[in-house]
Length: 141
Image (cartoon, rainbow, N blue to C red; front, side):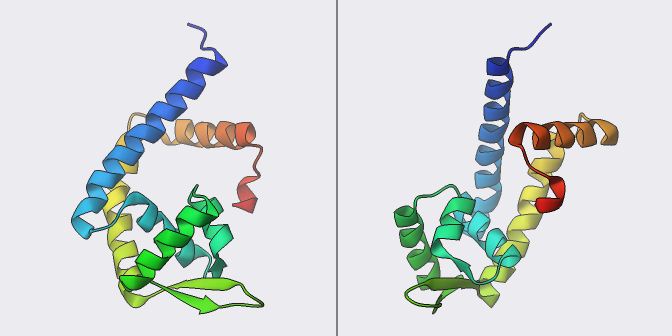
């Protein structure tokens, strides 16, 4: 059976939707939303990221991410520190790091079960094809 690009796009969206639902369920006992955990994950990878950078990385607008960052800072998960000029940089706190690690463990099972029907070679081929469709170089990630 030949799959159209629309069929493939819908399949990718369904997988994403399933990931989001399952990750939200896995993160709920930690008191984290998916976007909060994603923020902690990105801050771990990019300390001192700007508000705009974090908004882009978490698929938020600058305004919505700004509100989220304030709430996360109020909870003690991140720090907002002055950067150059009027910029505000963000850093993960010890509590945020603890929850990031716990969240990572919670969502690991979601990813494992999503792809457990694929062999290691199939996983690699899928990754290469997705990189090609996205126009990304795996070494840039």
